Length: 236
Ligand SMILES: *[C@@H]1O[C@H](CO)[C@@H](O)[C@H](O)[C@H]1NC(C)=O
Ligand SMILES: *[C@@H]1O[C@H](CO)[C@@H](O)[C@H](O)[C@H]1NC(C)=O
Image (cartoon, rainbow, N blue to C red):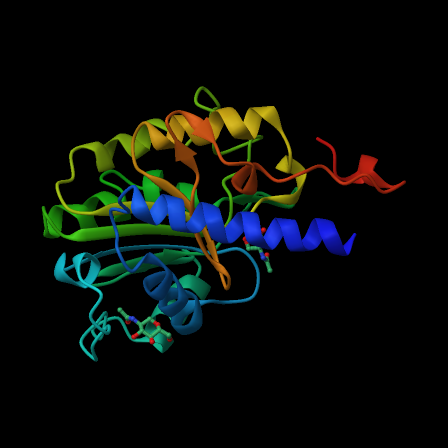
């Protein structure tokens, strides 16, 4: 077990170095996603999109006090807790899942930002600065059932085309692999669909991993199924 853990950590570091060497578009992605989570994070699922001056992403300089300073955490949280569950700000948009109907369904936060209106909050944000640095962050990876399967009714995939036309540095980031999708070949395939539109990363406290290299999906982004006796809870 210990051996496996060590190997896992070493493999992670190596992959991290390799992906850095092959050119990460948003250079200081870990700092930016750390900042997003520390400043705007809430309990449970949420998604954020930013479009900032590209210099914040192309240099290793310290993020300065002006970084996202117009989008104050309290106001962002007020927006995400409002009935609409959306914050529309100067350089940042954010959403939490929005209860829908009386059967306990939610409209997913990724959907709200990318497709929730026409134009969507994220599209409006991109329009403000054509060559800005844009990062789309979601705490949990977009689920296979609803969001990340290309022809699903609530799919975000075709909406991600908006990033293709965006000139600045860009990244699609998730922190956790949605537990039902761990190890799923469908999720692996959906990662490729996202990558066709915007580079995909998994970022957490330990660092950022580029999910796709030469059309091969990094297993750290796909995860593994649980093999506990009650694993059936988590499969599918
Ligand atoms: C990133 O974070 C590290 C550790 O907190 C810090 O030393 C470094 O200056 C930061 N870089 C940027 C670009 O903010
Ligand atoms: C962070 O992500 C790496 C893969 O990128 C994963 O191996 C590790 O378990 C994650 N850590 C946490 C606390 O989720």
